[in-house]
Amino acid sequence: MIYTVTFNPAIDYVISLPEFVEGKINRFSEEEIFVGGKGINVSIMLNRLGIASKALGFTAGFTGKAIENDLTEQGIETDFIHLKNGRSRINVKIKAELESEINGIGPVVGKEAVDMLFTKLDDLIEGDTLVLAGSMPTSLPNDIYEQIACRLNSKKIMIVIDASGELLLNVLKYRPFLVKPNHHELGEMFGTEITDSEKASFYAEKLKNKGAKNVLVSMAENGAVLLDSNGNFHQINAPLGKVVNSVGAGDSMVAGFLAGYTERKNYEYALSLGIAAGSATAFSKGLSEKEKVYEILSSLIKNDF
Image (tube, rainbow, N blue to C red; front, side, top):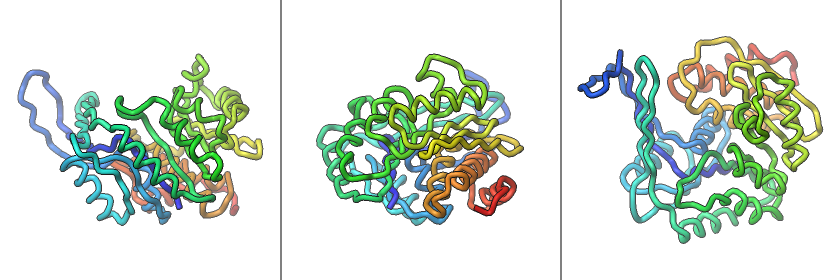
């Protein structure tokens, strides 16, 4: 089973308008509502690709109930911890001449709730996959990823980390199955700027040497580079298309990679499906539907695997 953890889920309220005039009443022409958070996005895309997962994390208040109800309606199993106070956050995203975001803070997550999450994670068994994605509320300790990886280290869980900086680096000693920084995040970790696949491959190898089994570096319009557990490099360029949305593209890539690896245990196929899922979401208003993912996949695949 694949489990995802979203520490700070959200409802994304997306509004579009011809122009945004500061200090005036603005009327939007279109609105959309999505439930989100990086782990939740991974679960949604996995579900659309036919792979079951269970979404874990923390929810609170009426917005938390709305998030859970939405996921249940989509057919995604959830097991969130319900916080007694506060409410899950609402993020407002304004699409006008420029895109702007106003992100909520989210509820306070106390030690009791964290201990409850740890107890749930103790039920994972060998062969399960755990996706830890995104940043955390300020109320959580900044070594929470490391604590989880340490706690599960003896159980042979396939841990996936989609984070940056110390959150990612501190987990490498526990040999996570997959880490997925984007090229900006990878460059920041090593104090450099990564502009091409050659440099991405060089620094991916440094992460592998620190303990990561597979390193997937997403590079926006330049596709992605994968250094796999066998020491082989794979690179696939992104397909051509009009980018209309960047939210959830990286999460979709993680989901596509996991779906591909679950299906065929083949790294090149997993990378291809990851690129297809990430690109399809970038070309869609929200997370992409399955049909668009596989349409793009068919244009990428050169081998029968």
